[in-house]
Length: 239
Image 1: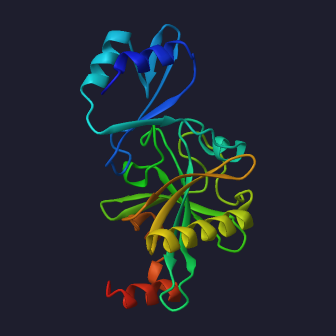
Image 2: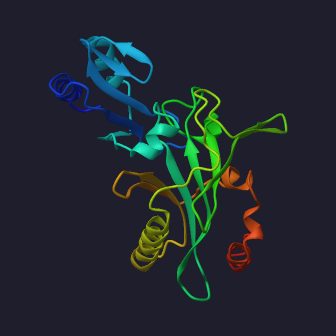
């Protein structure tokens, strides 16, 4: 990584300021590190590193980028404070109206197994979101040997999950449809899985995925149960 010394200097002169180091072409939370300086050492996920150890780690990275650590709101923080917990919203462009619609949405919540991310395939939780009300359903962990484990409370903290309501839910839907329509108008991208951070004042868009997985949606309900999603897949000859 270029200017490793510069990054170390920034962290040591900005104690407790968190940064995210992430692969440019990564997926499923692999290779993601949250780093910050405190107590005379670098904290990287659950590992403590001396400055020489950190520089050695940086020098072995290739095709990574650094971004600010987005502070989630109180609602998302309370669900599990050790990870950034995000909405994954799947949008599609209706081939007949040329307008975006929401095919499926879940709230991803991290666990001690998925840290430092909330990734479902790394054994984070996926909670269904009721489309009309924003209420959270039961939490699922990725099936293991054909068995899905379901939780109403967080398996690590005991925090009640099921029955809570996502704040700003109507505004979130409206804003994300606007974003999906804009991206389609500008780039002709018809199918996106959005990672959305819920803040105290609204939302922050983390990223859009052009080839999003659907298992974290399918575990709750088949996407094809949505007639508009089924028509989308048929029109584009996915089915």
